[in-house]
Image (cartoon, rainbow over all chains, first blue to last red):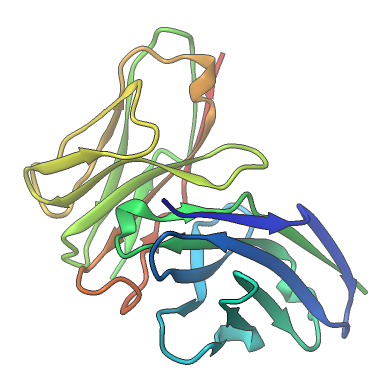
Length: 113
Length: 115
């Protein structure tokens, strides 16, 4: 079975500051890992995904995440926050099927001017 | 393409009432999913379908039913609404293949309140 834990339900950063959203996973099989973003009143949109290729994954809007097997982590980063990054971010893991996908509880990112 | 569309956007139900949440996708995807999102929680899978005529339970199926008579439509039925079903419901579709080669496409959600 797979699961993810997102550390911090709410993260606040200043515009231009580093964004770091934490995700740790648990999986009995090699995992596929995803980060999704949800803007208010919208569905989830894929930011990036890890599927056992490169451990450093680049996504849309300047986000990237690094898969670290030794730490069972898949943290999401962005060097410089923009006001438009304010949203809810979800980490998700699956062992190979979308019906087994498990989502974290989400982290709400606030960006202060 | 309209992608994944859901209706209604909002609904308030009384305890014991029934309703159907509609989901339609125009991308010819075989796989479709229903999730619920509770405050402070991630998405939990209710039901999914791998093609017309085939459905299966997800993590939290109790109190719900689904059908898949066409590739495009995947309605979710609540027979006897309960306050515990107050949530935001998302429908998603996926073309198939190896997981991760393409994303799940999510609808905008239906916000349901049961009083």
